[in-house]
Image 1 (tube, rainbow, N blue to C red):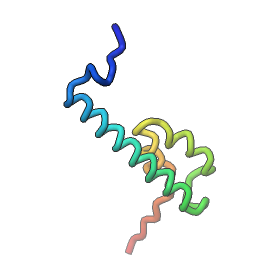
Image 2: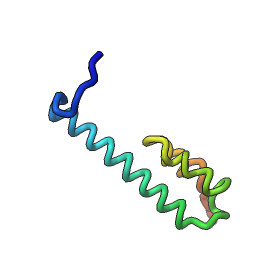
Image 3: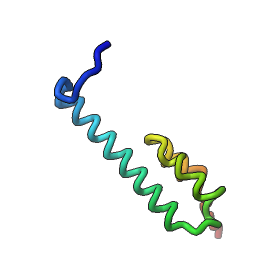
Length: 76
């Protein structure tokens, strides 16, 4: 199957790619910013361990926020 070029895609396909890419970049930027600002004791594991995880497409930042951050749940 020949590789398709950007110009061969429909407007809808181009728009979808741009939306997905912007979501992916926004999630990664938010996760990296959070990781940089969060104290080490609020991160599960070493901070440097989470850097390659966050780089895993769209799923990496989600994994970081679900499994990498210590959430303080106050009851009362």
